[in-house]
Amino acid sequence: MDFLQPWIQSFTSNATVTAKAAAAAATTAASSYPAHLYQGTNFDTLNIFEKWWAEWYLWIGNPVLATGIMSFVLHEVVYFGRAIPWIIIDRMPSMRKYKLQEEKVPTPAQQWKCTRDVLISHFTVELPQIWSFHPICEYFGMATHQVPFPPLSKMAWQIALFFVFEDAFHYFAHRALHWGPLYKHIHKKHHEFSAPFGLAAEYAHPLEVLILGSGTIGGPFALCALTKDLHILTVYIWITLRLWQAIDAHSGYDLPISLRHFIPFWAGADHHDYHHQAFVGCYSTSFRYLDHFFGTDVGYKRHRARQAEKKRLLAEGKGAGNKAAAASLKTE
Image 1 (cartoon, rainbow, N blue to C red):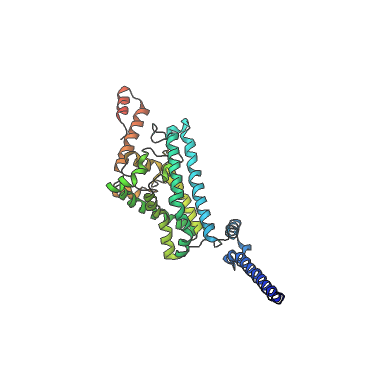
Image 2 (cartoon, rainbow, N blue to C red):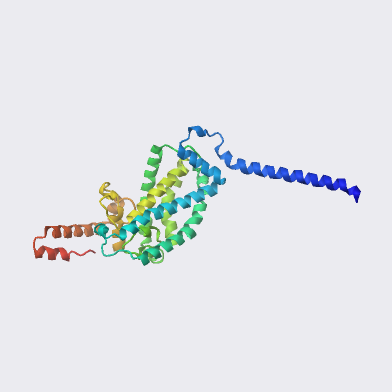
């Protein structure tokens, strides 16, 4: 068998060279794949946040994975980070004077049930959508990993458009969800708490999450499809503000620093809390003008007028007659 030895050595040597070449090629491809994302980018001109952004995508090495992780973590941190302070406020008797429905404070059991269901929804309904977010963004031509970021002035007017679009979409979609069969089979779950609290902002049927969530992300995709000029960072800022708005609207508190006291057409908790209390009317999210235009805030205005009259009579305290009259002004 000695005559076969040269052939065996030659085959082994060639196989070793081939394996090393393949490994080297794989290593080169793996290292160059994320690097090609920033070919031609002058990192010296970037600010610290833009450099961190690029380093994140380079470190993960897969844009789809990098965007997916960042999107999900952002959503969870913002959602629970904004909701937890309201849980603490619910345990503070000194804050009860700002609660819109003073007699209805959420119990720990209600808050736990809500948290459990929201987490299940986040991992089973929203997470799959988040993993498909990057490919959809690229399909519409949205900038994702790219740096530098757009100027703040551009992000500001784009986010303002998203607020207007989402509010209009939500008004009509939300109003439709109050139609008999849709309410019974979909929207009723969200109205389980007649006195809402922050965590309940996304306490909803999976179909409702999909339907109303379309208004949040639909604006950015529509703008991107038309202009091809939108960065995912702008969308992240928009979603952060939208989550804050939704949680505050469900907080159940009308604080002196609430935005509605400074922006007259802002809805806020004062507006949405009535919707949960009465089960109808006040269908918008951020603004009041559509409810005013379509007359779906008449009950809300009457209710708040009676409350104001009651407070006025109690403050004046002009005898038992007025006190009795004030006591008779019950909420709807």
